[in-house]
Amino acid sequence: MNELQCIRAFVRVVEVGSFAGAARQIGTAKSVITKRVNQLEDHMQLELLHRSTRKLTLTDTGADFYHRCVRIISELDEAKSAVRSIEWSLSGQLRVSCISSFTAAYLADDLCEFQREHSELQIELQQHDRIVNPVQEGFDVSFQPGKSQSGTIETTDILPIRRVVVATPRYLEKFGQPRTQEDLSAHRFAHNNHVQPNYAIPFLDGNSVRPVPFEPVVLTNTIWMLESAVMSDECMALMPLFFVEEKLASGALVPVLPEYRVQKLSIAAWFRKTPFTPMKIRILLNFLRQRYGDFPPWERRLAESMPELRANMGPRPAVEV
Image (cartoon, rainbow, N blue to C red):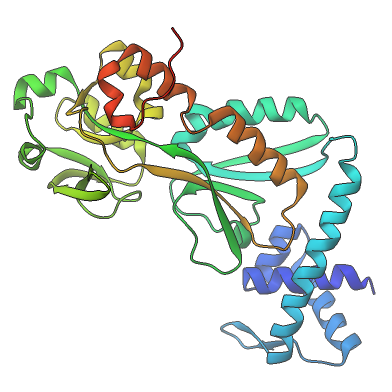
């Protein structure tokens, strides 16, 4: 019996909620995971899990043992990472997930650059248009908006996402140019209800939010549909600056009421909550923070080429002359 393997199998079963799911993440057969957990229980002469045809639940003893095991595994992994990183090199696998819009715009290229700096590291990137639980789905880190409500996941902001209402010039010719925030309520909107469930533009009024409601004609959970709807000349939409930078610069899209600030979002890193964050995650997050900063490069470019957008960005970023 390999006691550490059995403990890791037990922890993964608890986190995923099934023997089959744990086996998929570890990359072995369900029977192997079942055997390891059974061996652990036999070795300790304790029942750690209640098994039924519908679900697995921890016994009281199993719950206490699980939390202790998480700490032990975290400290062991941290010790291994610290030794391996003496020369600031990383190895092994790094599994990453990210919302598809930011993956396509920036993260894919940035992860390739990160891998070039750490050539012994194998990086796997999966993109998505939903909220991912990195613990349950086997990712080291997931980049997505919001904060986790799970006690097993830690979230930390990586970069701000500033947004602006956009439309095509043709749309504004057909339906008119809004002059006030209230005018927006009469316009046709495409809306990403994955990012923002309510139908309102969250404008800022000082330190408070002043929502301006609208009725969407297109609803979607993906930014690609949002873009298609806007480019059809039939809708306007609230979209992130990082995604529409090129179309704003070319004139294919124009900002609507850019003098009014919209409540910003953040892309956060979601990862397993442990006493010690693994070295590879810490180094990756530092790498990305250095690349983006409080005013990411796309916002700096827009602030220079389209001064009317600076009010939307809040305190003016430094612009090189």
